[in-house]
Length: 174
Image (cartoon, rainbow, N blue to C red; front, side, top):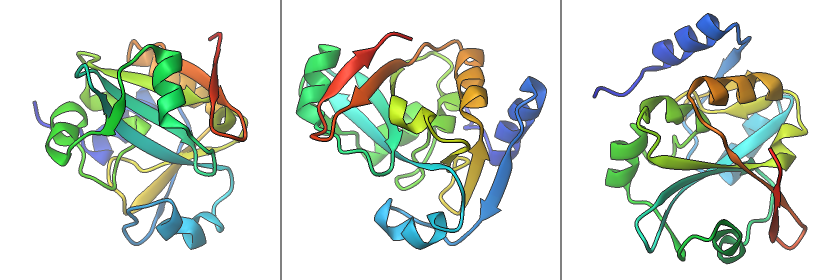
């Protein structure tokens, strides 16, 4: 399957009635690298972790950029094996994006729902929420309600976590 393009993503948003605004910028590969750009864009900015557990399960953890995350605690709350970061090859296979471009929007490339979505409640407290539109040279803003609409339209129910200041999560009822 050919991965979706940015145009495909925006067409899906339009079909769902999701308002979106995209800002073009230099490619950024880490949260820290894009700090100056994010300072100019309103809303909550995301960090997106592509994870594999020791049992072979794949997870996408989407959190507010400044959220502290204790991955060992997350794996325990989820009942998953110990986490490691997924390889570039696995990322391309499962989500159709390159390292540095990991985004919740890449779930559009996982119609079989092989990737488990884990969502930080802290992100949903911001309006808008910002993610790369499948490439790291732009940022797309949508409302938290529309983000949940997009996720639901993909036939997904995210695992929602609330992170304490020490990075330890608690599960939130959806």
